[in-house]
Each structure stands twice: as C-alpha cells, then as structure tokens.
Amino acid sequence: MAGKMDLEGTVRESHDQMLLSDDPYSLEVHMKSGRVALIDIPRWMNPNDKDLPKNLLSDDEAIRIATEYLEKTGLLPPDATLSGVDHPQIVEYNENGEVIGIAFEEVQVSYSRTIDGRPVVGSKLTVEVGGGGDILNVYKLWRDYAPEKEIVTITPQEAFEELKAAGVAVGAEGQTVDITGIELGYYEAPAMDEPTHLVPVYIFAGKVLDGTEETAFVRSISASPDLREGIPAVK
Image 1 (cartoon, one colour):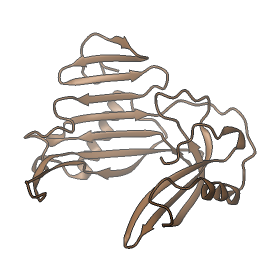
Image 2 (cartoon, rainbow, N blue to C red):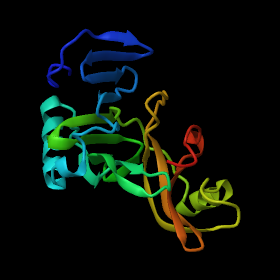
Image 3 (tube, one colour):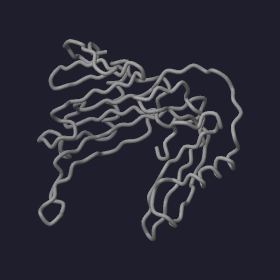
Image 4 (cartoon, rainbow, N blue to C red):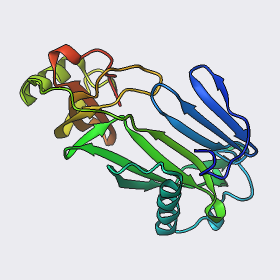
C-alpha cells in the first residue's frame, strides 16, 4: 500500500495498527477493521500558506484527483459512490469575535456505500485535497463482508416506536422532532470495535425544531431484536 502511495520507510506495529512514517506523511492501517488513515501531518487542518481558498482547485478537479488517487492506490472499492463535496475551514477571528480571514481550507471528497441497493451507515471513505491539488488526508473504513443468513426484521412502525422511546439525543426536552425519511439499510461499527456483523437497521433522518433553528440528525434503530447492542444514539 505504501509503495502505491509513493511512500518509503519502515513498518512498525503498535496497538493493533501497522504504522509507517515518510515525512510529511503518516500512514496507519488498523489490522482488525482494515481502517486506513493517511495524513499530511504539517498541513492537514493546520493554518499554512498553501491551503487557502485562492490555491484550491475546482470541486470537479478535486473529485477527479481524489478518484484517480484511490484507483491508483487500490483504495477505491467497487461499491463506492461519490456522495458529496465539502470545504472544511479554519477561520480567523479578531478580538471582537469578527471573522477576518480564512487560515486553512481544503476540498473534502466523500464516497458512500450500498449493499444490494441499501445504504450503509458507518462506512466512510474521504479524500481531502489541499492547495495545488495535493492529497492531505485519506480515511477509509470499509470492512469486507460475506452474506451469512436472512433474518426476520421488525416493522418500520415498531422501529419508529423504539425511536420515540429512545429519543434522538439532539436538542432539549420538549422540542419538536420532524422525521423526514426512513429506509432499511446496514450499520458498520467504528474502526476500533469488533463487530461480527453488518447489522440491518432502520435509518431515520430528521430535524429537531427549536423556534426558527433546525438541527439535522440521523438515527439508526436495529431492525433485529437480537442485534441491538452497540448501535449509537446518533450517527
């Protein structure tokens, strides 16, 4: 993997991870989940004179660079689909709290995953492209899987009742919650967890209303009574 990334160095093992450093990059691979993290340590999410709005490529160019990089390094799964582009920033403020500039900005290209047409919550693949088209960060959590068996699921209405009982862990008591979507999909646990399944879940999307303010949320409810453990309140 390091060779495909044009990195050199000695691989070492620490806390269930394989690590390699080749200044300015650090490459980490978690052995149990397969999670991959590549970081340009001096530049990623650090104010500098390269990663500024004036030096960024267009979103289309960033998508092209990100996709080509994933293909070249063998990190692009066949079931990955482009899902969005964001511009993470670090903003500068003066002593009065007023915005006076941007100290860092990049183009973050994200990909999502489906299994048999159903979305997977928790799988993550992002490439962050900085000034001049440089790769600043790659993060991939995309466990391999094999179908095991079919299971009986609860109904959407039963899942909705569980959601109402559990709450959405967003906002304060008594605020209005508006559910805007529900679909059946799968849940992949965080990299350091050791699940034995991709768990079938009902994925609820919605917003908490507080006067004129809205806070979006996504909440997963296990679709199987036997597989409820470990699914977080908010994802």
